[in-house]
Image 1 (spheres, rainbow, N blue to C red):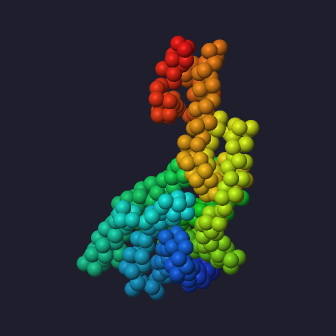
Image 2: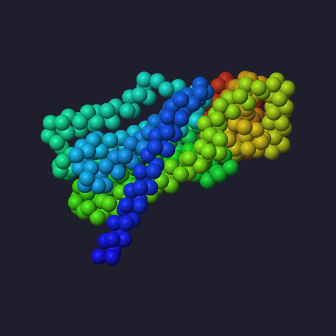
Image 3: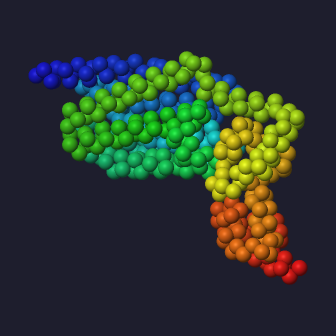
Length: 371
């Protein structure tokens, strides 16, 4: 009996903790929806993400007490918004790390599964009262929803790696606020998703009210912690809101003299330290070596050298490879040449070499020997 009383008190405490997060979370959503003109896409996506968390918390509260029984269908329909966590976080990650990102119709298509599922369940609820006891109908949906979200949670680090952000930096770099902020959202979203999945399956498969409330209470606790962290960051001055805007202003105010200073320092580092010999060199790693923000370094390479980061680095690698090929006493094979020059694959080496030199590395070596 004592255990039951203590457990009931704990559930009630967590219930009120969750209740206290709803208004701040929805207020944060409104704050992001209405925050200035700069980085509007990022802010709208982040506001949408917080709105979904708020809606999920409302749904959990309604489903946690029998006195809310008349609102169970509404709560279950609101619970379907868990399908939006993965897509919204994926788009937000892209908007924060890809300066060319623009929200378009093709990105709107990723919300179609949620829209279809919501309309199907809405129809079934209105016609058959599906959420008044037919919970087993949700199992197939939960499997599909989990598969969809899992895809986006896998795609996010893959996309970041393609955006010149090493996975090691994304998961372990705490000096970069942008990555730390994305990491907080990434793992928080995964925890919320897994908790909602577990909660639904527990009720559908075991029909255990106790296990259901325990899982729901864990959700309340984590949503309170997550909301508290976000509010704390917001009270520190909306750093994450102005982060991209500040970067944009720095790029705009970068003078030609500053560009030349950065470029000369970059050239010195490329010659003296030879970072291009690392086949996994990224813009982020080079920016840390040069102690210059990634966007500024990228702009300097584009404006002064007239090419992108990959072509700039490959130029140095190509020069090193040509030195090896020109040396008649050097008996390296073509494979050893491209590996010693910093290229990460033979196909990339051959393609770039032929594009610049008009012939393959083997043909170049033969023509050099002939001469």
